[in-house]
Length: 309
Image (cartoon, rainbow, N blue to C red; front, side):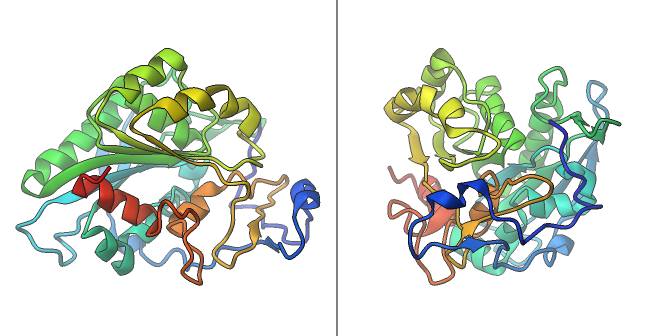
């Protein structure tokens, strides 16, 4: 489907979403995230990886040792995959993919330090508004340069590398699953978010036999990756995977406790689970989105690194 040009449009905060009729008494609509954005970009270094199959791939890296963490310790590596069209926003892609807040002092301290990698797909907008070159188009072998980028960061910082994670929302969620299929047992943790794709039963079985801890996050009112079409047909298989945890909330919220609405020509607030993930799946008042994850995503990452079940 054609996606909005976020550089040329403003969010409409007056629209009442269709799903509002399902809100219970006391629930309200929230149109904005509560964390500050576009303030940590200068903590990332920019690189380019040359690849003949896909063209050069730009990527950003945050190095915890460079920014004050001890040089004699090991740190997890987190790679974030952006959603469709986000690469067209330039460096703002770091924010849109969910990575930006994870280099903040609070999140870094919560995780004990972490490398953050943000690769950028070679997308372009066609005349009809559709986006060509997203992660979700399997005809482009993005897995080749992305895995090479991951390996390069690991090699360049080998003395400090701990557990390895991948995560992404929307088409980035697809690509997270795709990388798990392509490279079984390479990653220690993975978080596919609001993905329109879930592997078939046999592929899920194979992924379920790996060491990879998986956290699937998907809202039940997702406007673009319909829950009944994307999650329900694979729910039994996902629940039976010994290495998989599910976060499937009725509503996706902002930090202020309001149900999230994002309208740029059409409603996508419940699809933008990545905003809540960037808020660490925590409310501003300190409540956790899921009692099973009392310390949010950073706590889940720490638990994987510590080897907790």
